[in-house]
Every structure is written in structure tokens, then in C-alpha cells.
Image 1 (cartoon, rainbow, N blue to C red):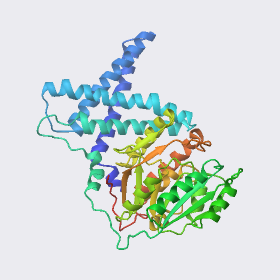
Image 2: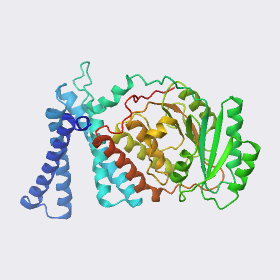
Image 3: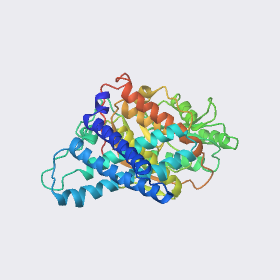
Length: 420
């Protein structure tokens, strides 16, 4: 694992960046202390000169040491590579200063963690942009290999593990519900109508998460009308993660999907999941952000945070999948057994389950899905409260991936991603 993480090119990139940073500091010191750039204007000018010269130094360090080969034609270097490198490095810095730092600060993440995450993400983005676009020869002979994505690309040609007994005879749906009296009945009835139309054997298990309204009474009525609709009162403390974990300890199907109570997940996509899983995959993950996917009435600020969080996870784990944070996913029973015990108490469970499935080498497919914002009730997700919890789970899984020496990996599976 560590050999994959510490590739020679990545080590050279980090060392080159450290040298460029040292050059930046020395230039500022030289300009201010020796050339006496002492006024506010001259100090700002010294800073700009130092940044530009250190950028040029890093460019040639990377060009000579990290991304060797390719064309040295003046037109190629001056008119394409240098401008693109400035865009790549500048984009990484601006992303850190204008988005990552303020966002993590708003989420009340400590400054130390904030700085480490910001530096890591900006360096990763700079590396990926440089690797894919800046130092890629524009001529016929490409002298550069995108090593950063080598492990990811190799996954695409690995055939999926197909179980000898992969039929799903009974599909379980877990629906956590906290004060959902306004929508739980319509959500469950729409799902059951479609599943019965498709002649899919199902079990719906609604977890009443300490509701203080009429949710439990409505669930009792639904159960009397249809014995396949069951409910259980959450015996853990209140919280989305606890409610889902309660359901995962009590379902009886061959596979289980997590579905939201607010009818934001399309019932048709549940059917799509079911048939895709029948092809032999261990998990099926829906994405709202691939061709065919759709979001309806997504609040703009939540959408921005969602895309940045998913980009961070993609870079950190080298994933081609781009919608990790959505809870609506389906897993075979053996996957659930293989990723337990789960540790998340709240909505951070939505990232713990799929990431843990992927790094433990279960096979998965991705299909486009549709999501719409709830029309009734109040969203239970509080971004400010959840930010540090999401980060805790993501970083703990990153440590598992790189430091556990494969102790938790499912040996039979093969991680793949396919789009329908």
C-alpha cells in the first residue's frame, strides 16, 4: 500500500514543491532585508516577485526532474506549458484560500486540520492538473505518463468478481424516519406500488428514529395494511447513522438499500439498482452527476459544498466515482457483514459505508439516478455540525487503506466501476 502511495514521481513533486517554497522565502528575505523593500507597496511588490520567481523555479524543477521528456520547443514551453502551469498552480492556491479554508473554518474544523487539508488538497489538484494537462506533450509523441491516475485506470480493465450465487431473492429497504409524518406514507406507498408492479420480492423496514409526531402511528397502519412493510423503534440514541445501523441489524433480505423517507430518491432507481445488482456486483452506487443523472431543486450552497466534498474524497482515494456522500445506495448482505462494525453516529455514515466497501475491495457499479429536494418537512442534515464528523470518518478510512496492510480487504472481490 505504501509503495503505491509514495510513488517516485509523487515524492519528487513534493520535494520540488518544498524547494520552491524555500526559494520563495529566501527571495522575500533578500528583497526586504537586503534591497530594502520596506514600504507597504514595496513589500507587496517583493511578495509578488518572490511568488512569480518561485513559480518559475518550480516549473523548471518539475520539468527537468519530475515530468522529463517531451518537447523543449520555445513555442511549446512559453506559449502552452508555462501559462497552463500558472493556471494550475493559481487555481490550487485560490481554491485553498477562497473555498477550502473558509468552508472548513465555517464548519468549525480546527486550524491545524484546516491547514493540513488545504495544503494537501491544493497540492493534489496542482499535481493532477500538471500531470494531465500542463506537462502533456501536445505533439504526436507523448513523453509523459499520467502516473497519478495509474492505479485508478488499471481498475477499469479488471473484470468484476461475479459470485456463483448472485441472485437477490428478497430485497430489503431501510428507511430511517425522524418526524416524517407528512411524507412517510406517500414515500412507502409509491415504492411498494412499483416493486409489486415489477414483481420484486421485498421487505421495507422503516426505523422510527425517536419521532415525536405521528410517524409511529402511521407506520403501525402501514404494517397492518401490508405485512411486508415493517417498522422498528431505534434502540440507539437519536441520529441518522444510529437509525441506519439499527436497520442493518434487523433486515432479512439478500441485499439492502438505504432510502430516504422524504421521497427524494426515485422509486424507479430502486428497481434499477435491483436489476444491476443481479448482474453480480457486490454494490451499486447511484450518481446524480453523471450522464443521465439529475437533481431537482438542490439548494445552491449545499450543491457547492457537496461537489467540493466529493472532489476531495475522489482525490484522496483516487476514485472515479463522484457521488460518495449520497446515502441512496444498495449493498449485498455479505458486504454489510464485511464492513461492520460501523462507527458513524450521524450522516457521516453515508460516506463510511461506500468508501469502506470500495477500499475493502468489493465490486461495484455506478448508474445515473434522479434526486429531488423534499417537498414537506425539514431536512435533518446540519452541515456545520457534520463537517468535522465527515472529515473524521474520511481520514480514518484513508489510514485504514494505507496503513492496515490489507487486513480488512475482501480477497475475492475486484473494484470496478461501470456506467450504464
